[in-house]
Amino acid sequence: MKIQPYVDKLNNSSEFKNFQKKYNDAFMVAGFFILDLEMGNNLHQIDYYIPSKKKIAAFTLDKRVSMQILDLLNDKIPEKLDIKTKIDLDQIRGILEEEMKNRNITEDIKKIIAVIQKVENKNVWNLNCILSGMGILSAHVEDESRSVLKMEKKSLMDIMKKVPVEELKRQMAPQQAQQEAPAGEETNKMQMPIQVQAESAEPEQIKQKIKKLEELETEIEKEKDELEKEISEKQAKQAAKSVAKKIPKGKSSSKKKNLKN
Image 1 (cartoon, rainbow, N blue to C red):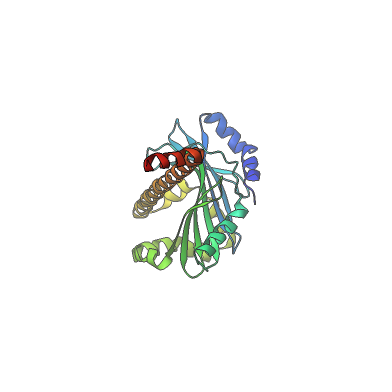
Image 2 (image 1 turned 120 degrees about the vertical axis):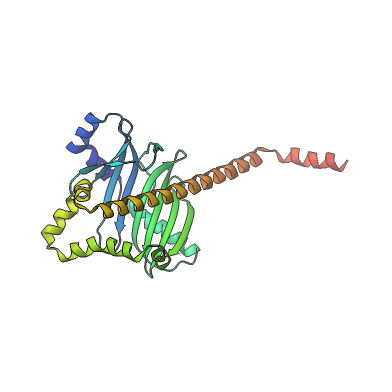
């Protein structure tokens, strides 16, 4: 499963061509993908930043091309992304499973939420996976080297303990309603723009959604800061190794002799 066919689909769509005419200053900042390894309910989305509006245009590319204009949750300008990645979507699972074996993580991956972004001029995959056995796996993978910069496993029960029961009920209510609705009604609801759904929601529900989005943005910023720190440390180590290789062995031995004298 490669990303390029979805990029081509976006570039050839009338929705994107009209978007470019209206916002010629926009540039790509992220790819967002859901890889459902059980049910096959995958999602492919590419995001563009509009500097003149300080907003994000999210293009969903499954079946038909659709666009939503979303607000930024902070004033930080995203970095421009080159979507020509070294890692294809169908390779992500293998990279994760290999590192999981090294860390003695034996659960199976059920679903992968993958986000590709530019961090300190490097393409980095931010991966969150749902595992068998009620586990959540988080990982950062550098695209160029395919190296796993970070991997952490959490228990879903630990995460649920931090969420109030009433909030869980609110989150489950829309899913239950979709399961009870006829197939046609469910499809129409899924295709309805976010803005339309928000208008029909209760004020309290809107407040809760905004609060959850703010909390999510805070967590993402923390992860991004940690990731930037990891990349900086890795670059420093690589620079130190390259300097050490450049020092001739003769000079180092002569220095030792002078010290002995």
